[in-house]
Length: 126
Image 1 (cartoon, helix red, strand yellow):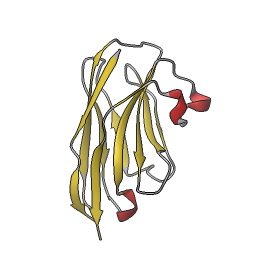
Image 2 (image 1 turned 180 degrees about the vertical axis):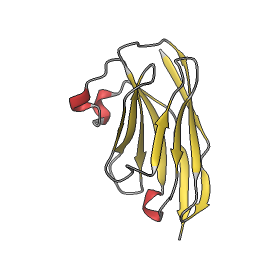
Image 3 (image 1 turned 120 degrees about the horizontal axis):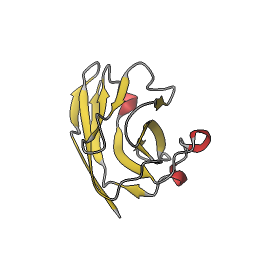
């Protein structure tokens, strides 16, 4: 089992920044990945960013590329999502997720992730 706990959400003005953290405990999956998803009211949960379990290559949704950065120093440290130049359309509940197996072709699909955090609210005011 893996437990994921997110923190760092809040209210910020357009153009501002926030950093989300996801602390993982329990099992580790050397072939897996960590990801961030978000869900706005009335919308489907969508992929934001992903990183291999031990750090390394990163992947982003087109809507956040160049503004968001996912990072992880090593398997013992949290996964971070640095969010800059925030826009009102970034408003959502942000979820941390863990996948036991990383598959590049399907990593943007929420069904590929096995464990989820409880979510943290991010609100960007205009």
